Image 1 (cartoon, helix red, strand yellow):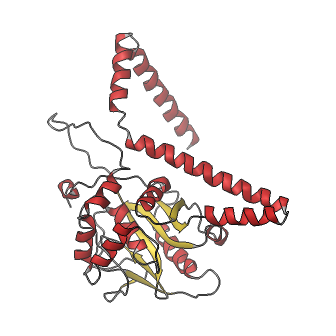
Image 2: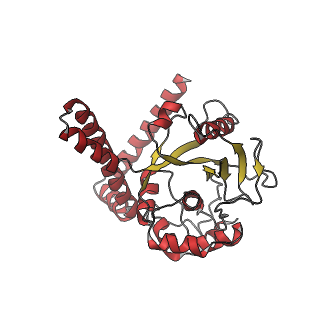
Image 3: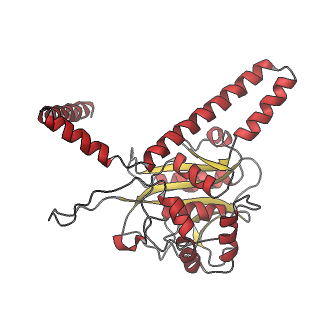
Length: 318
């Protein structure tokens, strides 16, 4: 797809605060957390866990005629919900919708429920077109996209190709682990999983670790997010029970967990407020102020020297 195929959808960041705010808009009482490890202990701490959202560097040479080299197979008779990505920049929201559409008895707002009902029986392409044509969903998506008010068009500058990143979902559906990639024609089935022990997460870990293993050692071209229940209601109920029974030690531990969750949400709210604000005017005013005060050239030189020192320091470490 070309840049013109975005149909008004803006790029979004791979940030749990962005995804969680989108879920809030959709009326879904879940959150998204960063996942730094696939160890059973790390995954257990986030239960109940509904889906894993994987971000990776997309290569134009990827062949969609075959699922991939991860032993999965296309499921043309997929029993769940699957929407293809039909416009650029919508992959984050498509990943969220593909996740939510396959969670049984999902609590949601009226608009999302209506959209899910409307797309019932549609093929993946039509489903994707219906999702990306929803004005309210595009507005919710764009509300958390960094503003861009600077255009370099017409300056005759050489165009540079930026790395493209893409979101896919790993989720359990009808006893099997599926990979839902909006750029593929069908969901990819990675096989059945054992309901005991870790359940579907064990199979998902194998698939994701295999995929990560295809990257060069030390590569940072991917990240992983976890779609999970909001832990705050359960923690508050647990705290109330512990206080009533006089268990101060455990109550103190739960109180710390609640405080950490609240601090995390405050940080998300602050960062999202910055995303909604256009700082171009402020930056311009600062530059003009520095120039009028005769401090712009010294500040530019100091910044250049600082970057050079940082580059030299990194080279010495290698």
